[in-house]
Image (cartoon, rainbow over all chains, first blue to last red; front, side, top):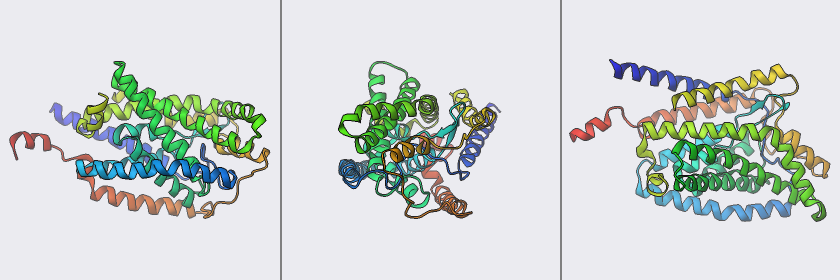
Amino acid sequence: MRRRVKMTRDRRLLAALAGAACLSLLPVSAWAMHISEGILPVGWAAGWFTVALPFVAWGVRDIRRRSAESAYYKSLAGLMGAAVFVISCLPIPVPGTGSCSHPTGTGLAALFIGPAPTVVIAAIALGLQALFMSHGGLSTLGANILSMGIGGAFAGYYVFRLCRRLGMPAWGAAFLAGLLSDWATYTLTSLELASALADPANFLKMLATILLAFVPTQVPLGILEGFISAGAYSFILFRRPDLLPVLKREAA
Amino acid sequence: MRKLLLATTVAVLLCPFLALAAGGKSWTGVDETVVEKYAAEAGRPAREPLINTDQGDLLLFVFALAGAAGGFVAGYCFRDLFGRRGSKAEEEKGV
C-alpha cells in the first residue's frame, strides 16, 4: 500500500515536472547570454573558435571512451544534451529588472557526464539554436561554446569536486556548482565582448560596465540555477545512484 | 529533496507573473538589453541570422517537429534512459 502511494506521488511529481518542461517549450523571442551573429569581428570570432575546438575534440574522444566503458553513457549524454538545449532556451523574466535571461544547464550536465563531453553537447545545442532559432550565431559559435560550454562545464565540475573534498554535502556542492557555472558563463561572455569591442585603453571599463549590466538578472538566476542543480542532482542520487559512477569514483 | 524541486519549479513558474505584475518589458532578453546594446554602441550591431525562424508560426512549427521527433526517440529508448521498474529486485534474484 505504502509502495503504491509512493509510486503515485512519484508519477505526480514526474507529471508536474513534465508539465513545467512543456511550458518552457512555448516559443518566445527572448534570449540572453548568446552573442548574436555579426557582433564579433572576424579575427576575434576565429580566435574563439580556435580556443573552443580542442575542447570539442577532447569531449568527442571522452564520449567514445566512456561509451565503451558503460552501455548507458550515450543515452545519458543524449538526455543531458536535451536538458542543456531546453534549459539554455528557457527565458525567465526577473521581476523588477524589466528583462529576462536563462540558466545554462552546463554545470549540471558536467556533474553527470563529465566536463569535456558537456562541451560537445553544449556545442550541438548552441549550433541548433544558431541555425534554427535565431539564437546566437554561427560566426559567434566559438565564443558561445567557450562561455557556456567550456566555462560553465569546467567551473561547475571543479567547484563540485572541491566542495566534496572539503566535506560539503552533495546537494550543497551541486548548488554551488550550478551557481558558479552560471556566473562563470556570463563573466566569460562579458570578457569576450569587452575584448572584441573595446579599445585596449578602455578594456577594463567596458568589462566592468557589461558585468554590472548582467548583475541584476544573473544574480537571482544564478541562485535559481543552483537550486535546479541541487534538486536535480539530489533526485538522481536518490532514484538512480547507478548513473553517477564518475562522481562516485572521483568526488563523492 | 522533493520539496526543493517543487519550490524551484514553483519559483520558475511564478517569475513571469511577478515580472508582469511589476510592469515593463519583462520578456526582453539581456542579449538585447546588454549584449546587442553595447555592441551597437561600439559600432558592431547584430546581423540578421542565417535562417530567420522568427516568421509567423515557423518557430512553433520547428518546435513541434523537434518535440515530436525528440519525444519519439525518448519513448523508443525509455528503458535505456530511465531503467525498468523492479529490475533491481530481479537482479537480486538473479533473473
